[in-house]
Image (spheres, helix red, strand yellow):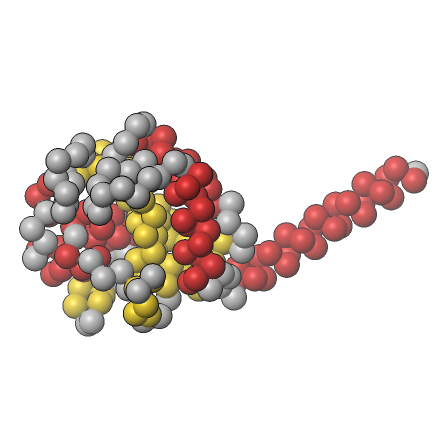
Length: 189
């Protein structure tokens, strides 16, 4: 009898904790995160990053785009990338979210040696609800996002009706010089 009471109390505490977490997430902001990898097992790096993002406190992964193989942009003397976008709901402010994403990059052995260079994983906050933020360490929306088909095409997978500055995503994609180099790699994780 005493053991049943202890077990019931544990279950009640766990249920209460889950309800609190769910309430925090319900009050959370939506954000889009871009993922990219071109070193090592690119697909495994992407999978590990998604798993780590899903473990961030007060954060839930809501939707995943398809994964695309893309040519590098900027520094082109490197291997092709796998790129995708995830939509999350988070109770973290953008600064705390950035810190957690950078910790995931470190955990997955990202080294910052060359700007736009090769990396095991790259995690960028594309948008955070309707926030506009211009700071040397964090700019939201991402300043290069609307010029990069390797970001916009996966973003369109998640929300084909999304608009920026009153302009639909397809119009931005049409103007991207890299739009023909974005090739479907895998439809499902």
